[in-house]
Image 1 (tube, rainbow, N blue to C red):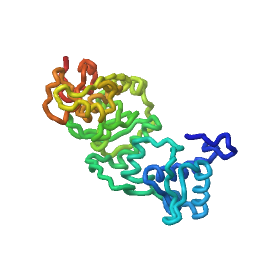
Image 2: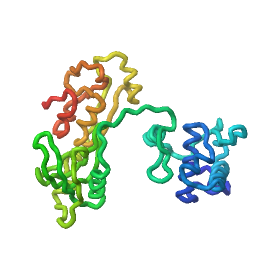
Image 3: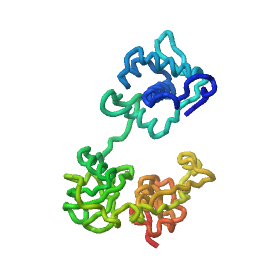
Image 4: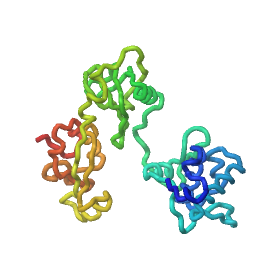
Length: 301
């Protein structure tokens, strides 16, 4: 956070309450990304009275006068030319807010803030199924459920989940499976009748520390696909430095990431589909990676 006023006698952001900082951050968000903000916006989002909204705008203007001014024609506050953000605005959260709105439950701002088209999520976990999974993760408990697998069909399971993850298409729970006695990914949308188990303690071998594929970090070197035109565009799209992108991922997630990013993982960069704009320069980096079979074109050496 910007603490530019710490020596001026004015309050600093750190001296304000959490609720005040959230309201000031919302004012700044709308200034920064929409160019204007009014009292009604603050009142709708936080349920504050008109007088309270007026005080918040006065406080923001007092702290950061270079950022905001009042437009007497539209009766709204607008961004100034010398605007410098005082709060950190994380890219993923900004895009989520612009495309979906703010908050849950009371006083949420639902819907996109600007025209935005987002593909429909085909795989959306049911909240009643998800909630026991996340409770068990937080409380360190096991879960009983019915799970549908491509290999064994539907069956009763007991799992010990410790994290959730997404491959960009589906949400998984990473968990120890008591039926198979190993760590696996369980697609949440394939679960039924999830319930948190009490009583039986989690065994030492069921703890996350024993999941070697989850704890192993793999470094992958991605480059523009050698057989595609205009590699400079790929470099720009992926923010490459000197034509190379180094990423670090968990071994348990590597194959999913490479599939989602359309990375050609064949040793001879032999995948011809134009969708593959990236190539894994060293396929041997996937040696011993359990999720490698998801990686496009990968062949076990």
